Amino acid sequence: MRTVRLQLHVPHKPASEVYAALADFGRYPELCDAVRDVAVTEVSENITISSWEVTFRAGLLRWTEQDMFDPDALSITFRQLEGDVAVFEGTWQCLDVPQGSEILFFARLDMGIPSLADALEPIAVRALTDNIVSIVRGLVGSAELVASDVAVPVVSTS
Image: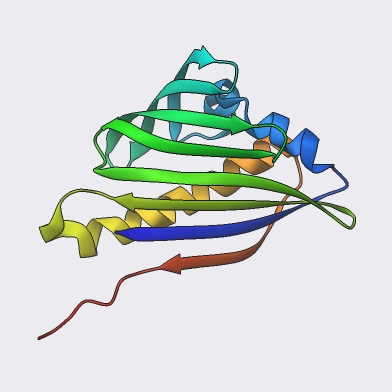
């Protein structure tokens, strides 16, 4: 299991505007070459089911997730329901800061192939990080990755 924590600074845009852009999943394929398709079905006012198709290495990853939107907290929580990845869940959080806003992104992912985890998951984490930065820049224009904390579990040699 890997975790990804990213902090991005978006200059001169309020968090509410950034949140609205992030919540527009339908635009993601326009903004990031790796995101091939996103189909969104509204379940209720603040919950959607979205199906994703993303390029990964020489193939495609597909999954369906539940997305919970909290416009008051400016956050989006997602969790995979089914798909090619064993576990994929996390949150987006937008915060107002001086001279703009911050986006905090957190995700946990497990490719579901224990024998290949040490080889595949770092590649997946790098691709996820690159794609998140690309998507944010496409949605809001200028954004700077100010912190990235990719946690990799220690593998016991005993």
